[in-house]
Image 1 (tube, rainbow, N blue to C red):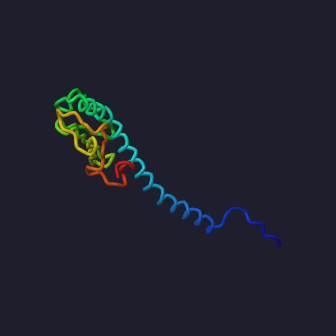
Image 2: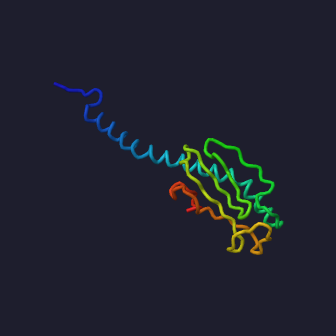
Image 3: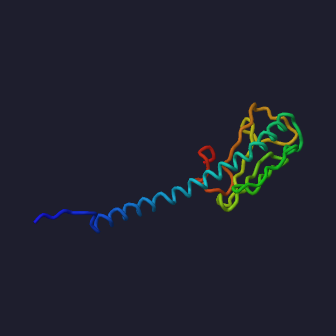
Length: 144
């Protein structure tokens, strides 16, 4: 007698389901981390207007450093962007969808922090974003 196999056996189907389960267990958490990192990057983009205004105010020696800044509107990722008038530091506060934490952007010129009313002598203004409560794995590479 001749036996012709039609379809898949139960073992073959169970192997396929197991492989799909393993791939899902690895990819879903990685995708969720990716989405949080994307939302964190959205907050850094929201702070660009404040960074420009602080840089211009510092270059002109204006006091306070946050003069003329229009606060960025809240988004799905960012609840607020606040600027310090004395140091020019920018605090980005994120919503729960982006981890609910903060990132601090600190300006300096020539390694010295900015001060209101004093024109920086170090040339360009550099921004450090290593402060705040956001976990390092969610920060952009420049902020780790």
